[in-house]
Length: 108
Length: 96
Image (cartoon, rainbow over all chains, first blue to last red; front, side):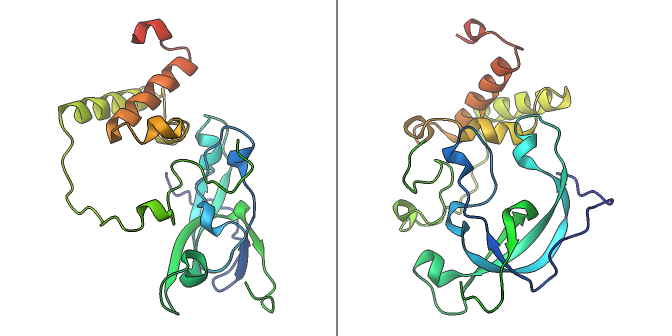
C-alpha cells in the first residue's frame, strides 16, 4: 500500500477513546477485512493516525477504493485474550470506517 | 455463513487451538515450488492482472478444511488460479 500525501483529515486524534464496530461482514458474503474478530465491539484508545491508504476491502475485489485514515489503536489485553497481566496491551492497525467515538466515562 | 461467532478461517488471533504452539522462528526460504509461485504472482502484478489485496481475498475464500491442508504457497497458487478464472484470463479446463 502506498501512503498518500493528500490524505483525508483524520477524524480521531491521539488519545481518543474509540469503539470498534461490532460488525461481521464475513457472515454476509465474500469479503476481505483487516479488522480482527477479537476486537469487534471492543473499546480502545487511538495511539496515532498512520496516514491514509486505499480501502483494502475494495482493492480486494478490484473496485474503486477511497482513501481512508489508518490508525494504531491500543487495547487492554487481559479482557480480550483472558490472559496476560494488567498493563499488557494489544496494538492493532484499524481503518477509520471501523471506528466510532466512545464516551470516555463509559467503561469498555 | 454461520450464525455463531466463529471467525473467518484465516482470522486466527486468539484461537485456543494455536495458543500452546511455540512460535516458529525458523524462516525457511521458499523451495523451488514456492519461488515459482511467487514469480508468477509478481509477473501477474506487473501486468496489472492482480494485486496482493486480491491475492489475500482469494486465500481467505478457501474452505477451512482445505485451507489447513494446503501449504503456504499452495494457498497462493489456489488464489491465483481463482482470480485468473474469475477475470476470464484462463478457463478452468486449462488448469487441469
